[in-house]
Amino acid sequence: MIKKMTTMTLDSLKEKLKEWKGCELSKTANPVLGEGNPQAEIVFIGEAPGQKEDELGRPFVGAAGKFLDELLLSIGLKREDVYISNVVKYRPPGNRDPTPEEKEVCMPWLKMEIALIKPKIIVPLGRHALGHFFTKLSITNAHGKPQKLTDDITVFPIYHPAAALHNGGLRQTLLDDFKALKNFLDSRK
Image (cartoon, rainbow, N blue to C red; front, side, top):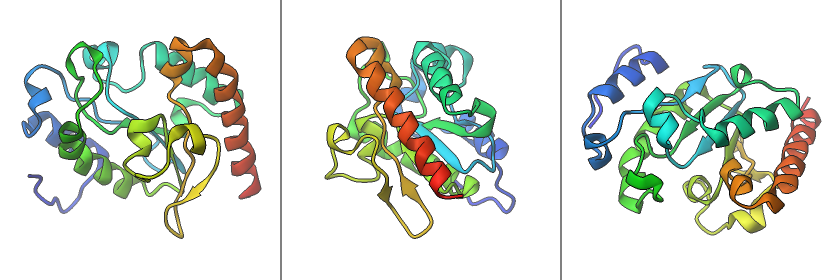
């Protein structure tokens, strides 16, 4: 699927994704690779691009992205401090949930992003992203609680910002989870 490159970078990965036609969604949507700090300690991962992301070719730039920016600022971070991506690299039609097949076929791209960045903390935003790291954890039970993935990587699940846009009652939960993430980051210093 993807040729090994001797000097793989996020930019070269983005160029390869533009050429890749291994996902059915690539026939109807634009590729959206992650963006942000290539040496970020923290990687935020959503499920798939939405309409605005598809149009602009950037992750989390719609309403959920604006809320994510607010959440980051609430703990003293900016987009430039972190790396933000999605499991699926193309927008599913009608903003439907990505299928298991779509998630599976796009997963190597996310794995390559993670391998290049080498984060210490991965923040899956919502159940679709969490399911790729822990299949037996539900976002309802795991949100706001660090989970050890490897000796070097901690997964810190949080609800997807879009969930609070659809259910206002989750807004405070997201704010609380980001405070817990900040406390976790501070405890590691």
